[in-house]
Image (tube, rainbow, N blue to C red):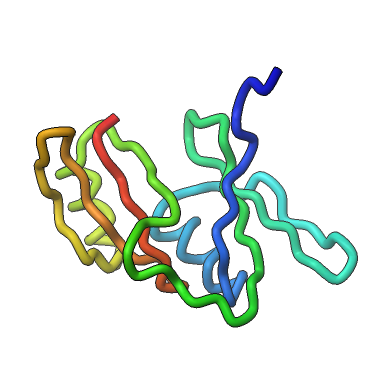
Length: 119
């Protein structure tokens, strides 16, 4: 039986730029960064999470403008929002409360929409 999600791929057009964004601005750590033939495989680890994030090179990628590609969880949405803004993360939706919970949406270095909510 399937027991967990091992990784989620994020399409990027510049792996070096995305790696810097996800490690320096979001604080993720490198789980693996290696060559696989002509391809570079970069997996990132989020503290205390089992699922990893893969920065998948996708030439010509156009980010979806309507929905987030990745949803993260945070203990405190307001605090996380403030910390990430201090690190230069660009938000398109500051913290907002809805009947289902509180969330914020930011853009990664490649223009992908990412969401985090309390959880």
